[in-house]
Image (cartoon, rainbow, N blue to C red; front, side, top):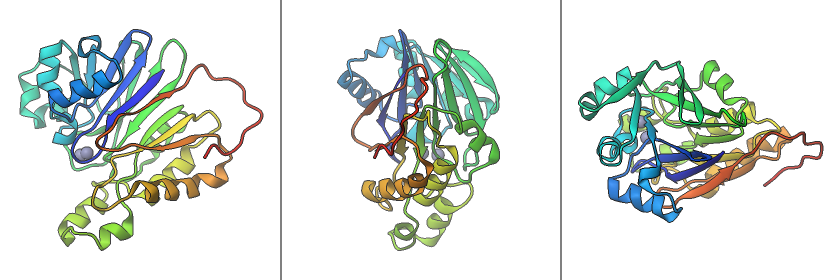
Amino acid sequence: MKLWVLGSGSSGNAVLLESGDSRVLIDAGFPQSVLAARLAAIDVTVESIHAIILTHEHLDHARGACASARKWGWSVHATRGTVRAWPELSVADVQTFDSNASFPVGAFSIQAVRISHDAAEPVAIVATDTATGVRAAVAYDVGSVTNSLRRALSRVDILVLEANHDEEMLRYGPYPPSVQQRIAGNRGHLSNLEAGELARDCAHRGMSYLALAHLSKECNHPGVAWATVRDHLAGARVATRLEVCTQHAVAGPFQAGRKVATEQLSLGF
Ligand SMILES: [Zn+2]
Ligand SMILES: [Zn+2]
């Protein structure tokens, strides 16, 4: 399985999964032209994608989804709450799923996991490559970590995880108190510290990549996010590669194959 983060942040999010000929997008928060350009940069044609799964209706995740799906023939999958909350979806041909459901899409078995966020019915996504058993997960826009989310992320090989803000940079940054409270609240976003704690809880020897995503432009810095999460992983004795995704560039491919027994492990960062 290969995974690319086509860009991540408050201005747009999209993740591409690939296994063999099967390509599935998670979110399309960019205009069509940007989405097409990001895919072209990794030699993927828009027509070769056959489905898109939406995590929730916020513009930075859903902006280009309907128009792109219509134009390029993608099937669209979203929770009922997301469909109700995003008017464009109600007129599109959408396949709905429950926020804790499992269902097949192309080469993947998709598990949705309900998360806490200020959207109608937001989910994290765990995708299992049915041919190899390799798992990838995308968990961003997470206000608070639940046991069900922790459990779902605990056996994945590739994890895209939100590290939205540094708590101090948020406190002393440009946002008014009401916005700070929304971001830091339990229906907002994960801080670097919270991401580090969750990563430490979920890290295991088979986790190949941990990609930090949805970093705030105003209240975070890639080096700060990386160092905070690295410190939490330091005691976990894993070989996970730690990467930071940005808003304006494609990150990846993050790749994992069939699991192999690994005896000699060291810190990979
Ligand atoms: Zn959101
Ligand atoms: Zn978002």
